[in-house]
Image 1 (cartoon, rainbow, N blue to C red):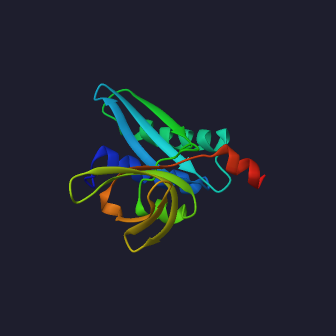
Image 2 (cartoon, helix red, strand yellow):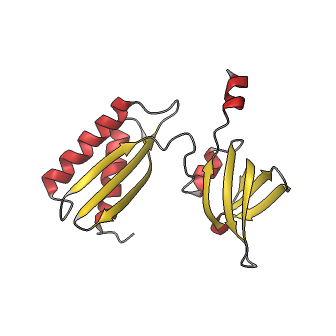
Amino acid sequence: MEPNSVASKLKGLAEKSAAEHGVELVHLELAGTKRNQVVRIFIDKPGGVTVEDCSNVSRSVEAVMDGDDFMPGPYVLEVSSPGLDRELYSLADFRKFVGSKAKAKVNHTDGKAKTYNGRIVAVDDDEITFEDRSEGEVKFPYSAVAKANLKFDIQDDLKRG
């Protein structure tokens, strides 16, 4: 992301707004066309976010976007929770969710892609240790991760409750 790009400015604005409202900016993405952009902001906090959290961040971000003419044209702003099966966007996300069930698509150095389903066991430097349901313990560098998300298991949640 270029430092002066719209996405970079939006990220800074969203981080500031999230912090002011006691939530964490998980991810920001721009979608749509240049004439009709969609700005998606995903926020979270321990215990989950509320509709009020999303509304507060939305109003705060929108006020600055409209006041400073951030966007070159019309846009739609969406602020939401990343969801139960949230995507893992960074190495810090993997660290944060050690012990959680997840699914990771990994591009190996031999050019083959492999999808692992299981649990994040550990993160050391940039190496992720994963307990795959069918292959057992596997290790791979974060740089090889093409996509990863948490997997919600209602049975586990009910056992804990």
